Length: 364
Image 1 (spheres, one colour):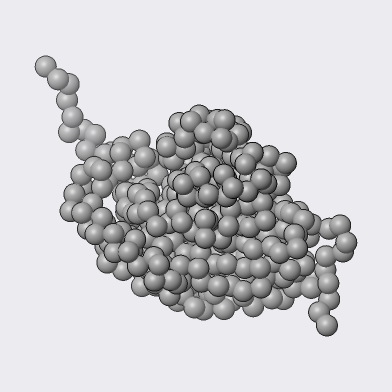
Image 2: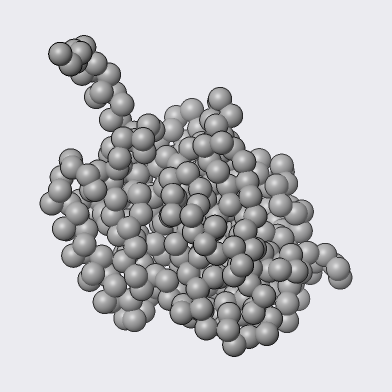
């Protein structure tokens, strides 16, 4: 009989921390050796620091899924994640994989999605991953899931959901946050979320304060400023019993929604939901992929996962995403395929502009 690590009254914490520590070939996908190393290192901590763990991937991103009873923001859990990813980076260096950060540190961690909660009688949890993308990739999907009754009829039918939800939104430029209560403040919320290069949904709560969703955001740079540069943002969503149903959480992904992808100098592309086996980008390094793993959480243990996008119900949106990606790709270096100049600050394009700086003269 397994040892129970959650005493009565204790809460479960799910921490998802990841980074791109090396991929093959090029930026296509994480190498199996890295997944094996990460899984082994995390397994050693189960029964001690951790209750359970799982290693996931999407594209070149490597995600460490950990459950424990230490709460959100625990330094020992974060340190463990940094050490595991550093060990993976050393292996990636030896294999001469693509995109290895040889000075890997906690600063290279792309951010953490975490939530702490008291387990319900049944606790379904969905883990969404995307690569390559920028912060703000989940804004559309979170609004549709938690604030749109055409996506989530439960907002109308279920007494526990009729009061709506509270969105915690972070301003990545001004380093501030605000809370918006739906449905009363839905239009104010949309005014911010539509500018996903600046405003990002960090958490969603019930009106009673129960955590419903959590996303990762970039860590501040040395100047203390956060930015929406290339990364592999993740999202954790609790479903059912007062929260949107599993199917309602997945429905927004049937729309081929355009996001800012982090490839090259940055571009807009449709987010395509795929099975985990199809999460490596090939043709044109895109379109960006989204994956979803479903778990039941029981006393901190992860039951699963189920590959939620491994479903022919998403075949139509996948075809539409590919068609839309081809259409945008035909624009080449022109907008709207290419990101606007303010969004390219953390890409290679500013270096090109520097080379051309002396070519310009005043207008007569």
